[in-house]
Image (cartoon, rainbow, N blue to C red; front, side):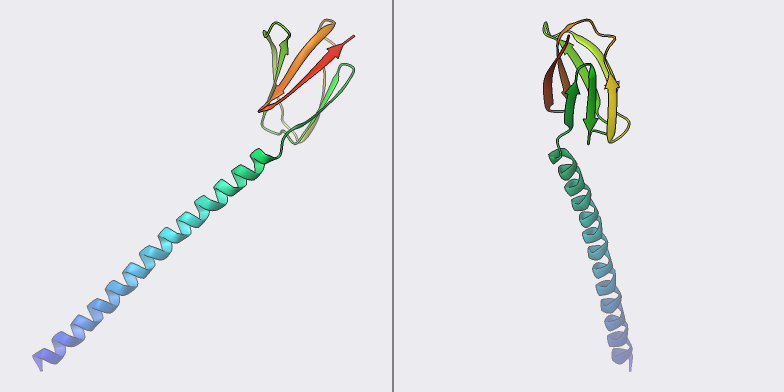
Length: 115
């Protein structure tokens, strides 16, 4: 009789331990899936290069929300920093003197002239 009770208790303990292990493993797998999704989204956002179009002293920037536009003169001196707060932004740079400048957003660089 005592042996049967011990066997039943042992089976219950084994079943509970198995459930606990499976639950822990599934939680870890879910956390890893979330991390993979976040990494994938970050990589995809890095693959989309900002689009910079210059027309006279107006710079139009697309797909660069959250980036910072850096403007340099040809001597390499940073002239301005402008935060891009939307996916399609037009910036007038007519306050800059005539000359050649470099625009940089992330890894994308363009040169432009103001006449």
